Image 1: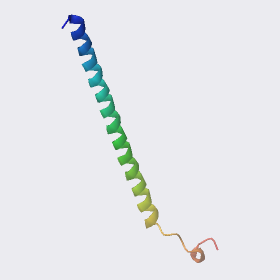
Image 2 (image 1 turned 45 degrees about the horizontal axis):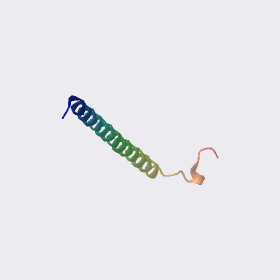
Image 3 (image 1 turned 180 degrees about the vertical axis):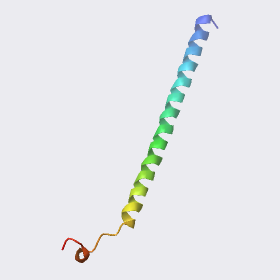
Image 4 (image 1 turned 90 degrees about the vertical axis):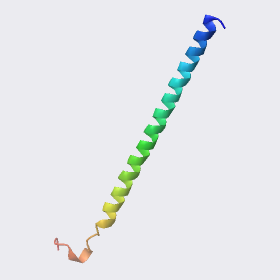
Length: 62
C-alpha cells in the first residue's frame, strides 16, 4: 500500500466521522425541538382548559 493510498483512506475515514457527527447533531437537535414543542403545547392546553369562560349574565359592564 502506497503513502497516497493511506492518506486517502485517512481522509475518507475523517470525512465519514465528521458526517456521522453532523447527522447525530442534527438528530439530537430535532428531538430536543420536538420535546420543547410538545411541552409548550401541553402547557398551553392545560392553561386554556383551566380557565372557564365567564357566563354572559354575570358581567359587571351591565
